[in-house]
Amino acid sequence: MAYTDIDKSDEYFNTVLYTGDSASPKSITGVGFKPDFVWSKSRSTAENHNLYDAVRGGTQGLRSNSDAAETSSNTYGYVSTFNSDGVTYISGGTNNDLNNGSGVTFVNWNWLASNTTASNTDGSITSTVSANTTSGFSIVSYTGNGTSGATVGHGLDSAPACYVVKSRDTAYDWRMYHQGIGATKYLNLNQTIAAGTATNAWNNTAPTSSVFSLGNGATVNQSSDDFIAYCFAEKKGFSKFGSYVGNGNSNGPFIYTGFKPAWVVMKGTNVNGWLVIDNKRTAFNSDSKFLYPSEPDAEESLPGRFDFLSNGFKLRNTWTAFNSSGQEYIYMAFAENPFVTSTGIPACAR
Image (cartoon, rainbow, N blue to C red; front, top):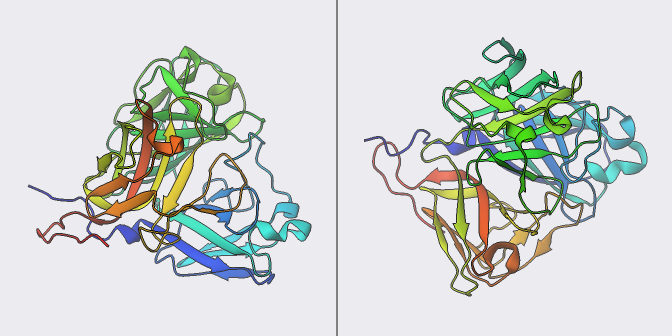
C-alpha cells in the first residue's frame, strides 16, 4: 500500500516570506522550484491579494479580494520573470506596497505546474493548460462560448476536487467548485456570501478525469471572454479538499488530512469569511496568524485558535469563522510532509 503520492511536498508547493526594500526589480528566492502560480499578499499593510501565473503571463494581475478584470498596468506592479527559485517583481509606482514596499512584510504562496503549456482538446472548448499530474495541479486558460453544457479539458489524470474560475476580461466574481458542496452549488472566492445554487455555474455536473463542465453563466462562460481556472485534484499525503461541521466548543473538531499541513484555507458554507493560515507565518501552534482571501486586510495574530498536527489540523476556539456549532465548512489543504512517507517513516507534529 502506498502511504503517499509525494514524499517532498515542498517540491510542488512552498511558502516564502520576505520584507520589502523598495528595490525594482526585486528578486524573491527560496521557493525551491520555478513556480507557475504565485499568490502574493502584504502581511503588515491592507493591500490587495495579487495572483500571477505563467499561463497568462506575470504582467497580468488578478486579485482574489476583487471581481476586477485582470490588469497589466504598471501601477500595480507585476512579475517580470518566473525564475528557477522564485520570481522577479517590478514595483508599481504609488502602489509599491503591493509587492515590495520598504519595511512591509509579505507572503508568497507558490505552486508548480509544468513550466510549459499545451493545447488541450478534451473538452468542447479548446484550452491551454499547464498541468502537473503528480501533484494534481493545473492552470487552464479558455475562451467562453456561452453554451450550457460546455466542457473544458483540465490536463489532470483524475477529477479535480476543487477549481476556481475567473473572467480575465470582465468584472465578474471568482466562482469556485468544491467537492464538499457538489456541482449544484458554488462559492465566490472574493465574497463572504453563502454557497449559492445555480445550474448556470457547473451545469449540475461533477468534473471527470479529463474535463470540467460549465453552464451558460457569464461568470464562468461568457461568450468571447477569456477565463483562467486553477484546478486541484487530491493526492494522497499531499493535498486534501473536504468539509467538516463545527461543534461550537473550544475543544473543536479534528480534521484528518493524512499529512502535516503547510497551508489551509477554510470557509463556512453560510455567510462566513474566508481564512488562510500557513506554517511559515504561524511558526508555532500557539501563535495563529490569519489572512483573508476575500479581504485586503493586514494579517491578524489570533493565538490559540488553530493547531497543525502530523496528520491534520485541530480547531481550538469557538470562533464562528471556523467553528460555529452545526455549521458546515469547506477547506483546502496542502502538506508540509505526509503523515507516513512512502517508505513507512512517520512524520512528527510540531
